[in-house]
Image 1 (tube, one colour):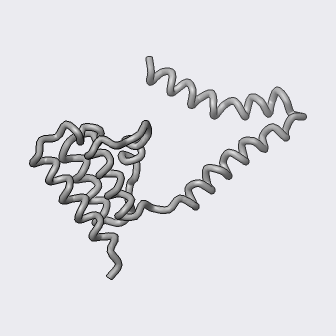
Image 2: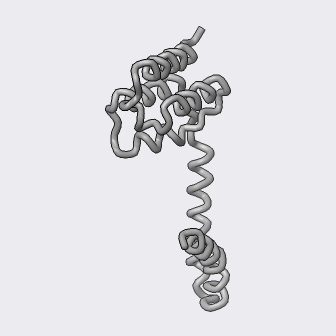
Image 3: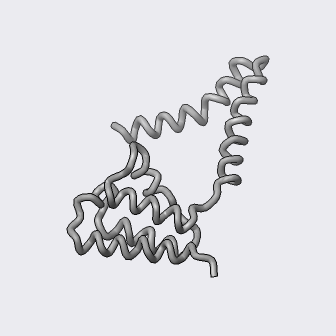
Length: 128
């Protein structure tokens, strides 16, 4: 049912501008909102900076300590660093204990492993 609703929503979002253009040919100014939306998405993609090693380490540490807010878990899961070394540490930190919000329930050995990855991430951020 969910997949059907998702598919039909995508279909409606593609067909709605075409139907609107046919039914309301004088209201072409309404389609400027579509262009503004596309421009905003492109602007967001262009201006987004990749996360720094310190930022990744700080976020991982907050999750490990349980000091996270409402969207911190999702934010950490979607960081997607571009630097290959940082990406590997980020992926390993999530693989050690499962979901990031499970960091507070890890045993001491796994917590130490995540702390080591946090230290390694911070060392990547040190400028030589």
